[in-house]
Image 1 (cartoon, rainbow, N blue to C red):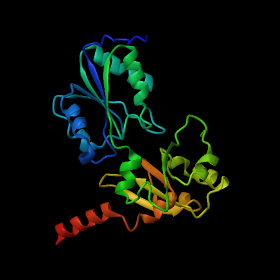
Image 2: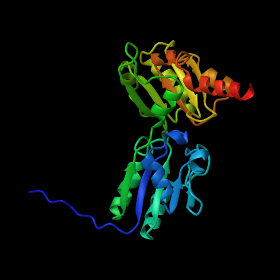
Image 3: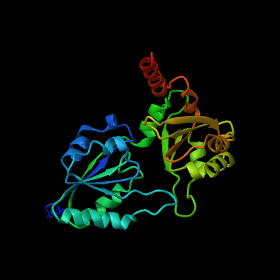
Image 4: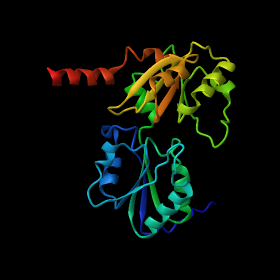
Length: 265
C-alpha cells in the first residue's frame, strides 16, 4: 500500500500567477484577487504597465525581469527571493507574463518552493500564443488549413536544439516564442526541411496591447520585413496557412480605428 507524503507548510504562501499577454481585461478573476490580496508582487518584464497599475498602494513591488542582452536577475536568485519572502510569512504574488507553465519557468520555481516546504499554488493565465494570435485575427486551428498547433521556444543558451524535420511535417500552426532574433534561422531551417518558401508567416509585436503591430510575409521574405519595419521584442512568430486569414479577421485594429474615428468626429 502506497503512503501519502504530508508536507508541513510554512506560514507564507506563493501564488504563481499568469498575467496573460498584456491586456488587463484578460486577467482571470482569481489572478486579480491574488494581486489585490498579496503583500508582495514579484513581477517579470512582460507584465504590462496597465496590469502593474492594478496593484494596490502599499503592496511591495519587486522586479526580476529578464531582457535579452541586458543584466537580469538569475533564476536561482529569483527562487531564493521567493523562499526568503515566504519564510517571513509573506503572501506573494509571483506575476508572470502569459502563463507561468508555458515557457515561464513556473515549474522550476514551484519545485524549489516545495522542496523548502512552502505553500504554493498556480493560477493559469492566457499564454501569448493564444492571446496574441486571437488579437491578430489568426486562429491557431482552422478547418482545412491547420489541424493543430505547436508551441516552440526559440530561446537557447547556445544553439537551438529543435527537430526541424518533425515541425515541418506536422501540418500544424507553428508558434515560436522569443524567436525574433532567430527568425532567419527559423525560416531557413523550415525551408531546408520541406516547407515551401511561400509558407505564410506573421510577426506579432506587443500583442494584446494598444501598441500591437502585425506584419505578414512568407518564409522567404520575413527576415527582410522585420528589418524594414524595425520590429522589436516582445514579438511572436507564427508560421502556417492560418496567417492568410489575418487581414479578413483583423478585429482588434479595426475596432481601435473605429473608436478613434468616433473620438475625432
